[in-house]
Image (cartoon, rainbow, N blue to C red; front, top):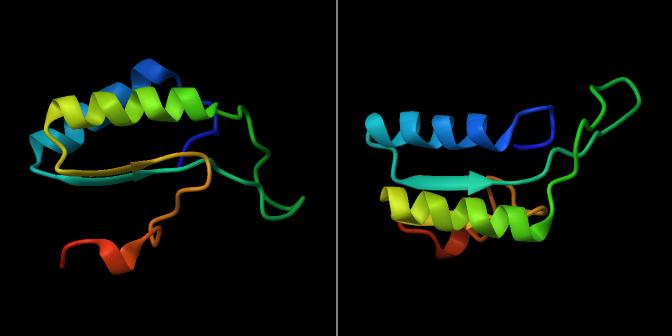
Length: 82
């Protein structure tokens, strides 16, 4: 979930950390504030930025990557490997 003030460098560092512990499936989506009682969105990431992060994740060795503003952990879950 992106949009709470993280930088691209922080996201990439987190992806490297995930690969170091053998994570090979990844979903990245935009945080959307569910109500005024929740944290505000600090930044809206563009579709192009999500695409670039997805490409970087694949280059790091993630086998399955879903990356886009509307992606959620259940995004296309039926088509994912068990």
